[in-house]
Amino acid sequence: MSPDTHLRLRLETLRQHSSGTATAKSQPDLIVSIAMLDIADALGDAEAYLAEYRDHSPEALTVPAIAAKVATRLTKAGRAEEALTLLQAADPTLRRRRTGAEAWCDARLDALDALGRSDEAQAQRWDFALMELSSRHLRDYLKRLPAFEDMPAEEKALDLVAEHDDLEEALWFLLHWPEPHRAARLVLATPKPLNGDRYYLLAPLAELLEKRQPLAATVCLRAMINFTLKVARSKRYPHAARHLETCHRLAAAINDWGGLVDHRSYMLQLRRDHDRKRGFWSEVPKTIIPQAEAGVKAAGKGVVEKGGKGRGLQGISAADTKNASVQPGLW
Image 1 (tube, rainbow, N blue to C red):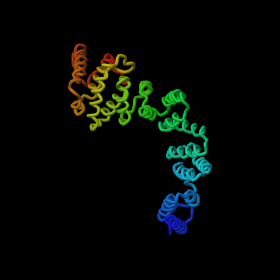
Image 2: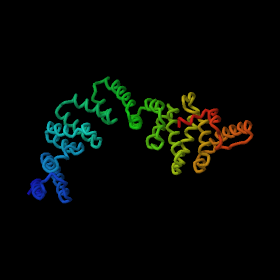
Image 3: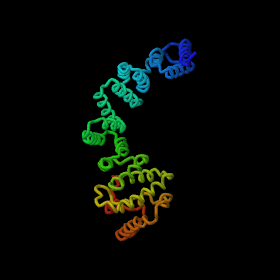
Image 4: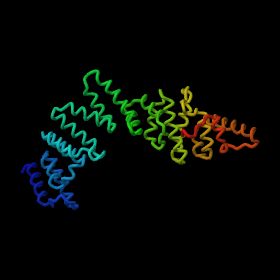
């Protein structure tokens, strides 16, 4: 008996022992179902694979990820039209499901390409790339364009990415494209502070921007520093100190701070608000601390002259802060 014949017999035996209902399955039924799918896959039997869901769990075929698996096998079996029909019923946009959307899109692209419907496939790549901010689908779209059409299309796409509703996803896309100029504009234009807890995004983004966009890089670095100190995340103090040292280095390359406080004023603000976080300051290179301390002492001296009593690092008034160009509302 050949291996294929043996597997087919095993498949039929498993079918006979399955409950055959579309209701909630027992654990043995689930094991049987998985085995049946594996056997169908081993045989390259797209019909058997489809039948397992169609006959026993038809509702599963409306789940994008599962529909994608079945459709991929149908397309490989030369049944691309059926694959498209199956996928249509599981369209993630109809149910606002993002889970499995990428696999669904890829399965649909395979079916469209198999049918020679290249224009529809290109439209699918463009729509998905900009809806889900998928760099892979955008690159696939661009490489299929005629010569000299790819660059204008890329510029248009990146402009649309920068207008995406989700700031962090847009920055993540621009980081990995990479597209530092648009990323910098996005960082500087956002009306809300960046979430400094997103170190996995902001740290590499600051590294990308620091050479040609030092102001935007500084915004990213300060966001991480501010978050770390605000919530007293002591395990991140060494990283925050390193970010502060980078800010100190980048300050020399910034001529126009725009709406951002300059580095000296920012250091003054940190010493005012977080002077007691000794664990952090012990990590900061001493070569950059005196600048801030000098500013604080100068501010304290001015207070003594006006009020007759020094208030130390914690006692700088709102007026002193204003004179030092600090804008607490920005951070």
